[in-house]
Length: 284
Image (cartoon, rainbow, N blue to C red; front, side):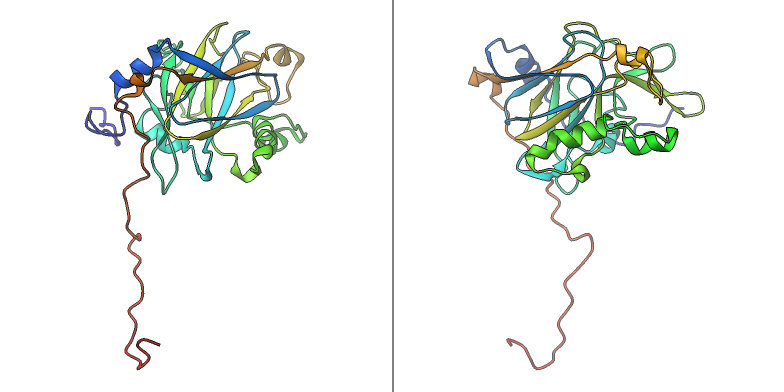
C-alpha cells in the first residue's frame, strides 16, 4: 500500500486555498495593467507586486524556462521556501497551490490562480511541469562540471536583478522553475525535458502580501538542447518571457480575503531564561 502523504491536512486547513475565492480572482475581467516587462534571454528582471494584485508570467514567443524568486518586499529575510512548499503541496505546482515563506514566518507569499498548462499531467517518463524538485543553474556548479566560467546562469542573472533593491547574492534562494518539465528517473536521478509552453501560455499568481519578485530567463532556453558546455543550438531555443501586474478594480472580488499573518507559534524552542540565584542583589 502506498504511504499516505506526510503533510496531508483537512480540506478546511489554511494550507489550502479557498477555491471559490481564487477562481473569482482568476476570472475577474475588471483589472488594470500597472506593470509590464519583456525580459530578454540570459537576463533577469525584478519587480514588486502589492498585496491583492495579480501577477502573470507569459511565454510571448513560446517555450522558455524561467527561474522565479520571491521575497516579502518589506523584509527580505522572509522569502520563498521551495522545499516546504513541495512538501505541503506537490513537487510541481499549479492552480490553487500556494508558495510558502520560510521560518519563522511560515505563511503564503502568493497563491497560484491560473495556469494554461494545468492539464499537462504526467508524461511518459514521469515528468511534470512547474518544477520544485530542482533549483537554479549557477556558475559554481558550471565551473565544477566544465572548468569554465559563465556569468549568465540563472543565479547570476537573479543576483544582478535584485542588486537595485539592495539585495545581495546571499539573498538569492531556491526557485520555482516556471514552464520547466522535470522528474526523477528509475534511479531517483533528476532529469529535465523540453518545455511544452506555447505562444500565449501563462502562469498567474495572487499576491498575499507585498512581494518582491525576480525572474531569470534561463540560458538553457526550452531545454530541448540542454548541455553544460552550451551550444549554438541551445542558444537558438532561448526566448524572452513577459511579466504583467494587474490591480483588481472590483473590490467585491476580494470579499473574504485578508493577508495571512505569520505563524502563531510563540515558543522559544524549549529555551528558557536562566533562573536568577538569590545573591543579595535583587533589584540592583
